[in-house]
Image 1 (tube, rainbow, N blue to C red):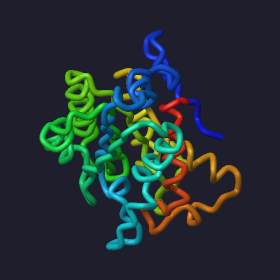
Image 2 (image 1 turned 135 degrees about the vertical axis):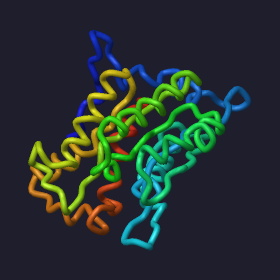
Image 3 (image 1 turned 180 degrees about the vertical axis):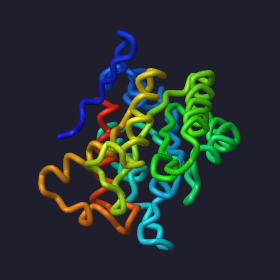
Length: 227
């Protein structure tokens, strides 16, 4: 079962039913009144599609899976999903090129996914990098969806003190504070583990999900684009 895509922010509700309503309205338009809807997926190796390094399986990664699902859901829409993710990058590095590589594309929606690679960095610097990207996007009237990290075979995903668990908590907090969208990939993986699914069956290697793992994330993203 997917985590309900609803965040409460000082009494303001950021809901999957309404947050992207203007974007969804564009997707529902038919030719000749429609236009290209641009979604940019920013982050590290996971949205870039890395499987068992150095193999890249971008067709099995969540940006492409989301593209396929949106095409089925909105058959009259022209939808472009651009991936600006770089393998091995963290949010501090990604934040420095955000304006040039992401906002220059004039996106309607941006997803940000750096949780795995932010472990071990200064938490205040990481938070500042995420906030900078979010606020730059807001100033450009771009909607933002944050993603908590996907699974990692080296992490203790049931331990609140594990660095990956802490990254997930920090990203959830940012989404609440900034009133933006959230796909809680970490929670989706945890729910699969609670069902008895072995984590290894969701992974292509220690820190990269396989198609099955990416499908969890894509389904979470799709909830933000209601029919």
